[in-house]
Amino acid sequence: MSTLYLFPNVLSEDTISAVIPVDVQNKIKEIKAFATENAKNTRRFLKSIDKSIDIDSITFIELSEHSDYTAIKECAEILKTTDMGVISEAGCPGIADPGAELVSYAHKSGIRVVPFVGPSSILLALIASGSNGQCFSFNGYLPIKEPDRSKTLKEYERISKKENRTQIFIETPYRNERFFSELVEKLAPSTMLTIACNITAEDEYIKSLPVSEWRKTEKPALHKKPAIFLFLA
Image (cartoon, rainbow, N blue to C red; front, side):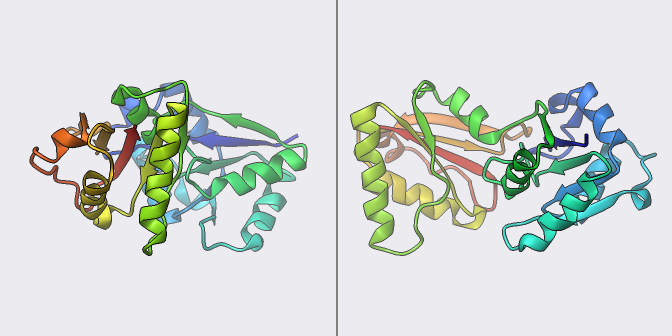
């Protein structure tokens, strides 16, 4: 029986030795077929693990939010005869990542699924936030348009206060600073807000403050940087 391996990727450049265990790197080097969001970036990632990897001998199937079921069918054909790996653009596959659909297919088809340890920006941000790690929700993106955006944010804050639940969000990097301003403006002064940016990088920035304090603090430089936003009301 073939196996679908779920491989972590780095969150920041030049951090492979720090965040990808050697055993995981060795298993990655054995795999000859990968489902990936971006084949070019995955090729670069593989070469950074081991320059001797023969990229031309490896099959890459692009599996992104824009892919149709054809990509899953291509992966299914490969999995009939050989093992396959899933590699996210950053962090762990299957979390805020299109690889989840392929994993679901594998379970339905009786294919063994094996996850590997690696960095998850969502979990690392939660760990470092000081917020409730017993009860939390990853909500992805807020609606883009108003008034749905503001109403949804306030509803998440209401739930957070009622259930002591940490709420976790991401945003498109070029909208980070706008999103931060929205959070500081619209959340209650007592709500604890955490910003986690460039996790695992040399310029990693993680800070938790009540919204009232954020309103008096210099705005962090978040433009076009990968960031996680968390709050606990």
